[in-house]
Image (cartoon, rainbow, N blue to C red):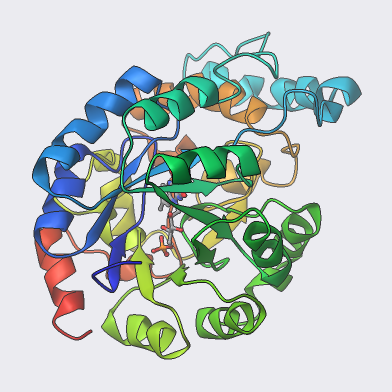
Length: 351
Ligand SMILES: Cc1cc2nc3c(=O)[nH]c(=O)nc-3n(C[C@H](O)[C@H](O)[C@H](O)COP(=O)(O)O)c2cc1C
């Protein structure tokens, strides 16, 4: 499936720049373009340098929630209540919180799914990976016809079995130690995450369990902060290992300076899974916003993402990390401010 054991995980929201992807690819890792949050046009521009740089790379997309499903947070007033709770913090930053949010069927709430799938079918890429849900079987088949290998992201055995049933070629198996959003899509998986149960086993244990249940190539992700971690997951049966947080501080990463600096700031002592920023559980450094709002945030992605966006933008403009989503995996302390190729080479030397 992959000609290298090291994969640079896709990091949407600005961290994975084309420069970062091309740099890791040049150093011998497999690079993913981050398609999340982008329109099709933006994705095409993001892919172009990778296509020019080498024959093998991937594109990652978010699978949107069905437009017809899960309107409960809107219906119960949970979003209104959360908005009210955020108002004082928002006004401190001079931010205006939207009073209307994109409807479920709005292309923004669907993360521009239709147009990005159309793009990837018209201009095929070697690999497409999905997160936040399973792509419909029809889409997997269309991608296969276009010559694309397809990966699904999962967080446990039940999700792995469901993903295998859609005909994908491999799985990205993400442990709860991973930085950023969880890939979990079955309701029971999300429940396990919030209670901490999903984090009980180690990544090698998760790989062994998934490997025993499905006969597909596995990419291991989550909390891999050095070659020793990587070797352990490869020994457990993963074909490759993906790193995200280890690349956030690199020179080519597009993460904000505030985010990069926070990862090296000893004032931050832990990470936590929180819905506070987007309504979907994501692992971040624990700052004031996480402390103040983690318990109150409703399970409503992407609505909470749109609700808090102006607040986060205002905090960034004020160079204040206290209300920023400082995504970080459990191995954040090892992230280095060096060229991305150095990180890749230091892993590959030992794998
Ligand atoms: C800043 C950031 C953004 C991320 N964005 C995405 C994304 O767009 N798509 C995705 O599938 N995973 C995303 N992830 C998760 C990674 O793909 C991967 O699972 C994770 O980084 C691995 O754990 P680690 O951060 O401990 O290395 C993101 C992670 C981080 C830290």
